[in-house]
Structure formats: C-alpha cells, structure tokens
Amino acid sequence: YCTFCHALAQPFAIGTTRYTSLASALDAAQAGNTVCLRGDKKLSGSDIGIEINKNIILDLCGHTLRCDQEQPVLCITASDVTIRNGSVENICRAKPIGAVQVGKFNQTGAGLTVENVTFTGSEGGGNVPRANALNISSGNRAVVKSGTFTGNIYVAGSLTMEGGSTDQLGVDPLATEIVLSGGSFDSIKVENSSITYASLLKTGYVYQNSENRIIEPEDMSDSIAVKVVKC
Image (tube, rainbow, N blue to C red; front, side):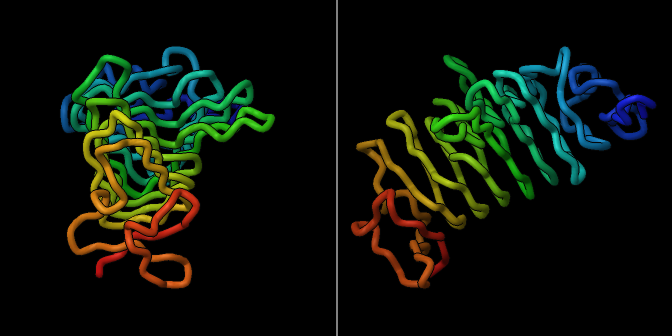
C-alpha cells in the first residue's frame, strides 16, 4: 500500500505475480490467463483508455475499477474476453462517458462475456442523459449472463442476454442480432427496421410487466418496463 493515499501499489495480479498497472498485466498475460483486481482502483497513466486486446478473464474479485477521464474505462478489442465479479464505473464529470466499449469504429470481431458485474456510465452533469454502461459497436458482440447496468446497454452489433438489468436496451439501426432469454429492462427502444420486439425474444420466452402480466410483442413500446421470462 501507498502510505500516503493507501492505494494498492500493485493492484493487478496473474497468479502470484503482481503488477502496478493493468497495462503491464496485459503485456505479461497469455491467452486464457486470469487477471485479478486486488482492490478498488482508479485508472491513471498508461491505463487511461486501455484496450483489452488479449483473450483473458478480468476477475474484479468484488472490487471496482474506475476512470474519471473522457474515455471508456475499458475498450474490448480481443475476440473472447470475460469480465466478472465486480464493478466498472466511469466517474467523468466533464461529460457523459461510457463504462465498457466492445469494439471500435471500423473494427470488428471483438467479443465480451460478462457475469456478476455492475457497469456504470458517467452522468457528466446538467440534463444530459447518463452515458451507456455497455456499448457494443457494429460487427462486435457481447454475452450478458448477469449484472446491473446503470446507463443503457446500446447495441449496434450483436447481443445475447441471459439475465441482468439495465435502464434501457437500445437497438441501433446497424444491430444484427439480439437474443433475450432473461433480463429486466426499464425500457427497450428499437430503432432498426429489421428487428422487432418479437424477434428479440428467444423461442419460448415472453415479456412480463411489473404486475406479472404477459405483454404481447405487438403491444410493446419503449415506455413499458418489462422482464423477459420463460413461458
């Protein structure tokens, strides 16, 4: 620990080897390794705007990874990354900035699986809406097994969602495939002519409102809060 700020001097670890930054841990990581967060950490220096470009597991181990800069906390560019067991939070005050970005502009093939996480986009002050908790760029994909997403999940690529909750699921005109077999949504907003509320549902699943009443896809709108349940 730093004796002044009490922060961990080596907050990341692969096995018994510890690292001072996420960047140095990623440099050392091999495909399939688990990088563990040993305590709460606000990213700085070379970790600002960091890309996870190797197929690793990032185990947050119950801790929180934060960033206060005008970039997503994490950008996923590798094809098979897992984030689990903790929180990723953007705390930028200058403007709304997302927490986790899957893929980049004109970059495809990134893949992320998340389980038991809390992702939070920043508010940035004023009346501007909170930024996306999870943003999936065109040509990239994510699998959400469980978690809480404060701010939207916005999909311009593909999404499989088995559980979790979010303020809004936003479906971009470029989105290719979304399959819901679980999850709670304050709102689902579809802006894609080839995707319907019916096509979002995995076969055998339905929308259910807070009164446990089934909502038919043709009756859905972005003003209705629902959860997806097995029928």
